[in-house]
Length: 343
Image (cartoon, rainbow, N blue to C red; front, top):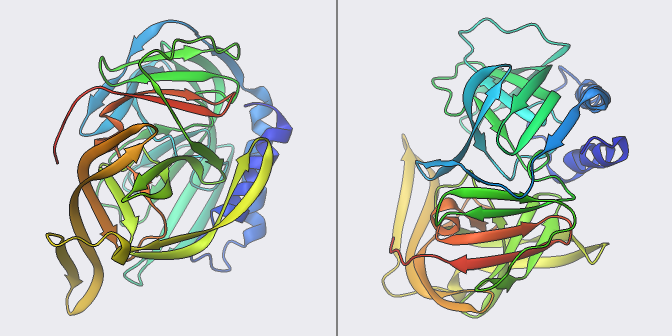
């Protein structure tokens, strides 16, 4: 994690794969890049210790994963968003969210960015780089680089502290994420683990994060593995774009298509959301048992087909029905079904 080359690549991917929406001229994109590069330089002082082989509990509530820890000697629950990645104005290796009504803390470097929201109002993000000491059953991180952020006109802060895949698991490690007993076991780069009763799942490691391949009605799609989503599965009603990923150590791009008509069923429910007289989005809710992951088929659940969406997403209602082996080192994924549940 700490190697400067790796983090430089993360910065490049952030600006090429996760386009900053609505950036206006103050501050300039150059200042934002400078902010990110400052964070990368700060990482040189980070000291990392990971604890392997011990099964440790996590907190699973409200369809979300929380890791018990101490942050700067204060007990906290860190919200685990596996999709969070990159040293940006909003994401460090740790993200701290504070209310705009709270005095902004002293930071090593700060920046403000003004963006246009979906309702055409401007939002100001104020972000600062800080060091944090974070201790848990899984890791002991000294001087972990984080970004503290406040948002103008915010009404609530849902998760004050957040970490993602750049911290846990390490790129050389594997993680056993078990919802059957709500525990995590971290394994080092030797990666000796038992896959009995698990099934291998095709996956991709992309600039947007980990993607899992599922088939819906016998058509294969790659779904973003998103612990921040509380849904079962969601898909665009229509999407056509290029999908790029690392496959066998090589960067590969393919065209990607989604068409709702290929999955349309008689009992689908159509929902339209409005703001005043304007249509914000349309949602199609579908109950199906035509989902396959690995060699597990006839999986039942609810799929949301969303008009204003760009890619398929696996959410926590789906993820929590399985135990997972996520091998970052070998780039392999295994799953085991643990319960039957209807949504």
